[in-house]
Length: 243
Image 1 (cartoon, rainbow, N blue to C red):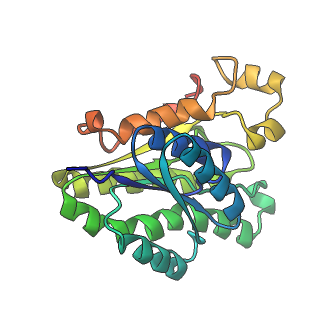
Image 2 (image 1 turned 180 degrees about the vertical axis):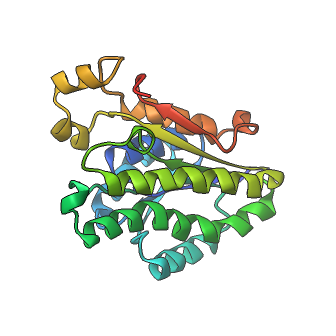
Image 3 (image 1 turned 90 degrees about the horizontal axis):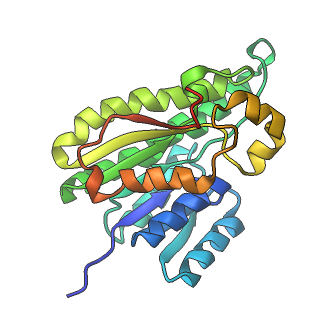
């Protein structure tokens, strides 16, 4: 008798880090749902690469900041069965010193990272709890731990994931569901290349280099596995020693 693979939803799965997470989870045998907001073609490319490697994947598009749109999309996904792994990776930057930051900059960043966490995770909890097993991992940032100039909105949103995840971990532990946060530092990709020249990275990061998306994906994959059942409510840094 065949065993139905565990389904995993990765928000922001069309980006550099999200794509690496999707690829790793698919390689580990999960049936991956690659989420995008406006970049559906990029999500479809991630899906195509996973399928070419022999994995299972599909794409979905909705705005995590829009509660009604997220709920409608997730209800459609749940019609095919429970989703037992969710990776809250969707997030945006809109940097400015707080003295010059607009209300729109503040609100949109928090809407995507923090309200998006609620909009995506909350509808999945009861179906997940009925299976008595699940993994919830949110992708934060070293900025939430150390702070960063020009990122009060981003740091606030990501730090909010820490408190929410620690509380949710207490609520769901008896159901076999773990809830953790991975907080990357400087990770190679389009965003880091523009913001962190090589000399800056050497000054900021004790390891003297940017991390790779695959290094973050490996930690996420561990937290999603059977061996991580006693790891919950934790914030795990992947930052080359930054803090």
